[in-house]
Length: 239
Length: 316
Image (cartoon, rainbow over the protein chains, first blue to last red):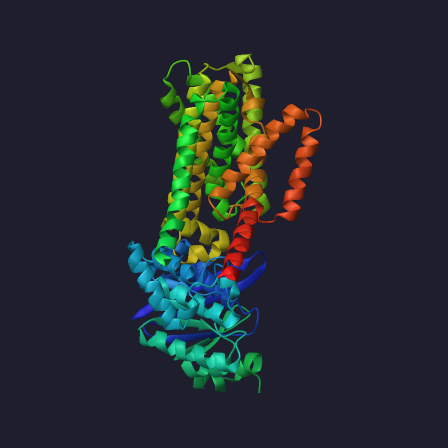
């Protein structure tokens, strides 16, 4: 089943074309990677999907329903959650409160406070932050801030998760742990769409990869197809 | 032993709160009228500051529209005071401010930082000058007389509004709305992306805070007896709550209360003792506090408490 679908999605910032006529489709249960050089329009595309930015033209559908024009909080409640490129945690709140807030507000149906507290506790355990629940988010090292963002996104009970470079700034050991976490999330049945620069990771976990270049789709295919694609090697991967 | 200590710690502040309340409720019976009037003024500042902090504390949006909400309450009282009973006049003053805040909120809460501050200040000034123009050109008389209410009644009404504002502050802080507001203050974009309807929550909270300012204005008008746009919408009512909240510290509920009480009392002392230098002295005190107490009086109290508990540990 097609979970997320974009038709001729466009975004202009004044004269600058950030995203140009991009078509994409993501099936339920898939892990799809979004790669491309800096400034290719990857994060902009995520911002269009999650409602941070209005589209200039084109249409984005989630489970067949048009979501372009909806507010971020409405899109979240439909089941689309995201993380941010530079961790945007609630710095002055505790780790637990960060997860609790998402658990309380992220769902279509209201949830009781005790239920939300239970869920937040479980999720902190799931991402491996259960020992630092009472710590202020600003005091976490960067790898854990990224984990907290993942926990916060999961707390909204999403069916589709948008990961914007969850592995950026992590050391190799932390990358390995992040990949484990991604596999665990996938096993929960959550569909993943992820921007990533860590090639080894993305080739390993993704079923399919979309390559953006100058705002347009350059290529799309399985990791093998992408690594052997001449155009992709030329503009992004290198020889 | 531990359990005893815990319940002791828990009940002492509650008991203290109760004693304070009883004291405040009975004070008009055994003090000079002057003191009752002074306390009324202090409570007016506390109410404006506490209600300012309901919205601006957690969200970190610095609003300079307090004078608009306060002044609208003052005018509601001046216009309706002759025809309607006092409780209705006060509720009406609060309600009009509430509705005005909803409008201002929907217009301005998309703005952030400096733009929001300037816009809210502009709104207060716009109302003041529009009203002045209206009175000078349409009605032909500037200012109004307000029906006088005896000062004990004014005091009690202020006390009731104060207790209500404090109660609402407490309830919001403990509720999921409080958590949402703090999330907005920390990172608004993230808050929106975890499903918080930021515009709606900011607007409704802004309006709740305006309600108490309007109610305080409505009762204060009866003590002033004569009001005009300069008195009712004085920019001082926009700046004072910000200063008082910073002075007290916004991290705890009692911060704005403490800040407003101390500064309002200080203002009274300085105006009577040093009428010519009071603004100068007031300014110096403010600068010293902001320089040396970045977390306000609350920070001072916490530092003192921490010091106390350290000594305790050393003894044990």
